[in-house]
Length: 363
Image (tube, rainbow, N blue to C red):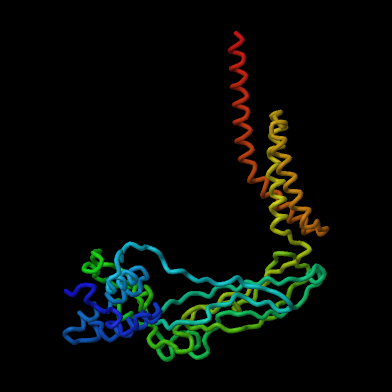
């Protein structure tokens, strides 16, 4: 059997040496469909199918690909590095002005035959309104981005076929076996099938517009009726206006989360009230056990720090603001209760032992 250095995996898959992971994946899919033993009856089809699977297993893994490139170039210490390629991320959604913009999806999409029906997620947008508007009610237009059902395939992901089919690459298992014993000495390796992405089913004829997912990223607008008497944190739902589901599944909801600045605690204020609440159980147990003086410095530090954090953000006169303050205070008290009880018991036991020791030396 040919060794690793004798095989040009890039040539086997028909890609360049600087091909991206997605290009490698697509090349494998195309060749695997043609060479699968259930489809191709040529005598060497099975061997060639194993060869392209082996090539994909190496080139689709950043670390294995790096080692493969290093060994073919004759670089020393090819196997000594275990780092990972950096991963990207998405920014947080933002709001502002009369229109709120929702979370932005990826700017590119990839073609995938994987049949993965999933219900769409909700889209949650914060909409800021004044206290007067929240009290009287209002109507607000919100523009945002979401995944909507693809118009070309009507959300199914398939242009003509009504049903999905068994993945021809893995035979419905969702995984493929690749023998890498002659390469890295690890024998047969199980990996997720790149054709169906582990589902075992594929879309028969993926839509070119949505890439087979049944949905596309688009800008949408919805008019939300915020009812009279709304308060900070209230939610208004618009059914079916969230992200569309994949492969024909139901869409999620659009959720408008009301934000009333006059009623909202800042994160610093919430932490400040929590600190004050944390000190309350120590005061109670200190009074009950006549040990308040022992905790006075600790209690004073918590209360002063909490008050500074609260006052710095500005005290509001709204009832809902004070209600939120009370909830933060209660949360802090519940967190401090167990710790205060434990500390008080330990302090009492230690003080008792000290008195016993002192009396013992007297006799």
